[in-house]
Image (cartoon, rainbow, N blue to C red; front, top):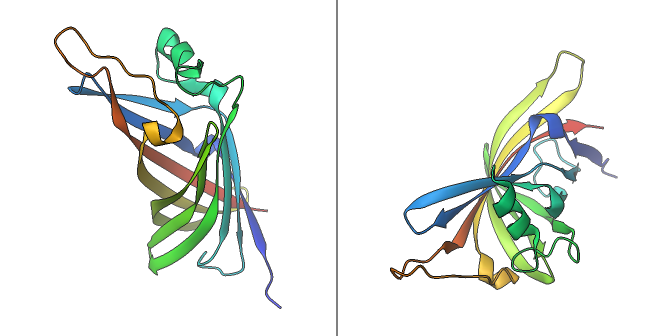
Length: 176
């Protein structure tokens, strides 16, 4: 019988970011400051590992308080009613450092199958004897498919917020 190893996200050495076009001419980057997750694996190489993740919407940060409050409002995430973004899925190994992460992504009230590209950074023991592994996870969503419908057009006809959102997570997990 296989032994399952549990790994927890190390929030001190991890970050969750998103990027979206503003006025179609530049990119705004934001992050979630509070998140948690785990990886449960029966194999040392993480192939087939179960992944759970959630981010606290109220901790969204784009370096601009007024925009952050708008993103938390019912126009976008409706953080009061839907406080978490979540994902549950499985890692599939493609090569020694390349994986696909397939599962269900939930934003607001919408859950959809989703696939992330994952680059495995490797495994290392830190100064305190903790066994850690690192991953860079990327993907793109259409925000409107997840109920993030707010939109506006400038007087010149430019779109204020793009529909495509790039998701980037640099995650370090620690063996429990």
